[in-house]
Image 1 (cartoon, rainbow, N blue to C red):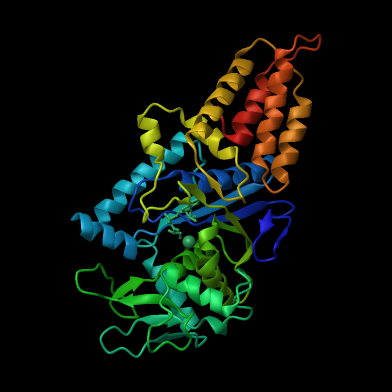
Image 2: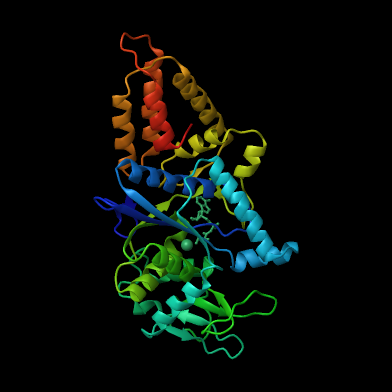
Length: 390
Ligand code: 5CA
Ligand code: ZN
């Protein structure tokens, strides 16, 4: 897989035993769009590829179930924030199930992990890297990023670029009282009308990055194999996780950082805040086969940014129909070549489009009248188990 921090395709996962995978989960304030789905289907493919190569997989995912965008949406629409989160989590899970995404072993909300977040902040505090801003009204707690050796190594960004992106993605470089503009919030003291919890740091709620650092360390341990997410998480999110994790655990946080390209619509990144969304649940209600959605997503290499068009779905539906017809036939072409090609494609930086083409080639050969006829059952099982398409 391509590791953002080493800027190269590297081997991920152990030689034997269990691969440990952490994928950043949703902020549950709106329904699953095709960008989210593309990201979770990508890591589902990695999960299946690990398993196919004989490894066990320990998979953890968080839910950012208390954060600014969720609280803002709840108050703007007059619903209870916890209820909004609960509804959107349920919808997300239904969408993932329909797309045949294998669920994580640990699916952990920030709220339920508050004690583990607080204890992580306390252990970072013991290193001197945690401080309160001098703000009598809101003395929030921050992590001093430059305490972590090699800070900046995940994204490789120079400071001016880092500062600009930080401000765009929820950071607060201008806030007075910080030791360094890139220092990130780890515990926000209670604000009026916002949920807050008692802790040794005072009444408040967790910051965003520390949530994933804490959940990954707690459920996977340090130096786990892959932290994944969309490319919008490279900086600051995964950079901050790497820095906090390294300092807290005294060893590397994740061994590799893997990022999916952004799915766009009408020339812009598909995002809840822009509202330019194609929702998985809407497509399902409209009668679209979730397997066609999955095939449409798999038809794009995970690393590239791409734009959704309606013809993506039409192409996938035609492909699905052809595959299913070949699987339902009495016999087909030999299975060994397609096994080899699909496995080789996936093990080479998760080349899903090449894997789909290999199945297409088998389907085409199966349609040709040939003396060598085999049961299509094995290929159907391959496509089911490795590509998640049935
Ligand atoms: N809760 C945080 C991660 S800890 C978060 O980013 N939530 S999210 O709901 O905004 O996004 C969930 C996942 O979908 C993240 O991995 C994000 O990188 C990915 N994602 C969001 N928008 C897109 C998009 N347009 N294309 C591809 N992936 C996307
Ligand atoms: Zn995360």
